[in-house]
Amino acid sequence: MTTAFITPQLITWARNRAKLTQGEVANSVNVSEDIVSNWEAGDARPTLRQAERLAQRLYIPFGYLFLSTPPSVGIPLPDLRTVQGGHISDPSPEFYDVLNDALRKQDWYKTNLLEDGIGPLSFIGRYSLNASTEVVSEDIENTLAISTEIRPQSSNWEEFLTRLMEKSEDIGVLVLRNSIVGNNTHRHLSVDEFRGFVISDDLAPLIFLNGSDAKSAQIFTLVHELAHLWLGESGVSNPDYRRRSQEQNNPIERICDSIAAETLVPENTFLSGWNERASTEINLRNLTRYFKVSQVVTLRRAYGLGKISGEEFSDYYLNRIAGNSSANQGGGDFRRNVLVRNSRTFTTTLVESVLNGRTSEREAARLLNLRIPSFDRFTSWMAGVT
Image 1 (cartoon, rainbow, N blue to C red):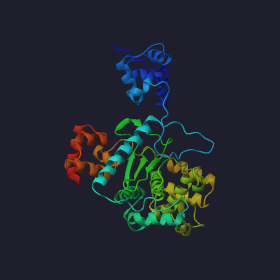
Image 2 (tube, one colour):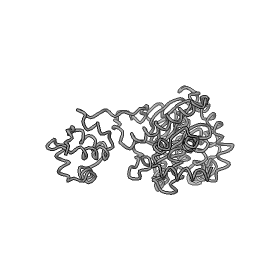
Image 3 (cartoon, rainbow, N blue to C red):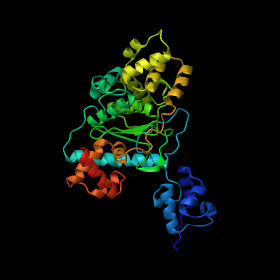
């Protein structure tokens, strides 16, 4: 058997990055925990086949195991999660794989648009960071027809979120939502790491929503990322929704948070609808029903505009957010999940490209993280619903 002369410390680095124990790695490679310990100590070496299995389990390229020192795994987007005086850890394998998967999709879609001669979207980067919050939010609201179409057509906030995603795609934004890596239900995304990210591009803008987040919070995250597009700012976001907009640590996140709040719940309308003689509970219920957003969004607006105290906000927030997490953990109809996870616009465009002979089935299946037989069944289903 061929010995793989890997660098021992690379196993330790990759294992810690993947948050795995030596026992978990040992089970996946089918060796004892002591053997993995010896590999990390440099007292033994795996075979070539064992090393290949190691790389697969640790979610790293095989060649990484032979590097002299651990690589610096950066994020190819501005990292806006940095907190004052704090440290953002290296990206998890799950986040890194999801981000690169989205970048591959965005690159394919942009190339397709260029080949078809499609022109740029006018709203991308329309405003600078110094623009008025009210002006930007009004433009987003008008472009998406939130007051004239989305709210009137939505009976509750779940429908509001669905229509908001659909409308965002209608104006040219790819919207992906997933709580796992691709279709792998064993690799979950952490909301502690990120809520979403956005790729600002005047041809093929893309928004990714972390489906592990509370579904009630995803409404705000989506509009927060849309604000990024109107400002022409890409980035990875993880705003703390327990804080007011003006308390967000990153300056760009503060601006986008404020724009999202004004877009979803305009200040003047909110204040005119707040009844000082009624209880907080009644006000939240009435205004949530009016704006068709979740109570989490209404609650944050009430706190941001000084209608409730920090203590009252914390109590309500924990109650509203509880039971709403893990909204998209891979259950439900698999074929419809493919559309949500990969963007309806991207998926339909890709399938049409295959049917027109411009893209191979193999490439399309890879972009959708499907095997070819599954892709064939999916396209047959698509033909029946489109």
